[in-house]
Image (tube, rainbow, N blue to C red):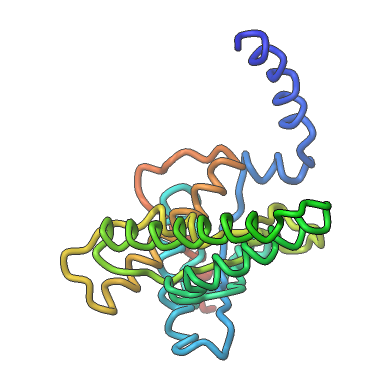
Length: 234
């Protein structure tokens, strides 16, 4: 184990050293960040959901870097955190039966193509197993949280003004967000949505902190434009 760790040290140092200069510079001296959040327009209450998630993300992000408030105009060197939601679906979709069926068909087909005469039974076994795991996972989530949350998947990009290449791009999966959710004693719709938005924000900001090595600030930081200089009247 010690030898493996020692062998990995040069590789980790190489990965850090290979970061693009603009990424390294942004990590040390980040520009104020504006947040944009896009939800598919065909999703119910898409504008309200977008607003709720963006507000939660700004609040969480402000704990480690300066953030441009909603509706405010940032400086010329502003960076933009663009979140594009690719999917929002109920926790119950797809059903455990659908997951098991899809898994069974895929495994059985591959097994038969590989020449296994028992491919049908392989598919049946793995289909039942996958369906059972999916059902157990949902039961556990509901027992732990007291509610069944939505599953949100998204693509996140961080881009600085005036540059074509993004500084950072990554995806967020539904299970990552669910892992950050807390239980609720009063699980009405509004309270659940608020908790879901906060959990999503935690996942995104944790990824940014891991990439740029930002430490928590003593207090939230928000960008404030400088007051215009008033020229004295002659």
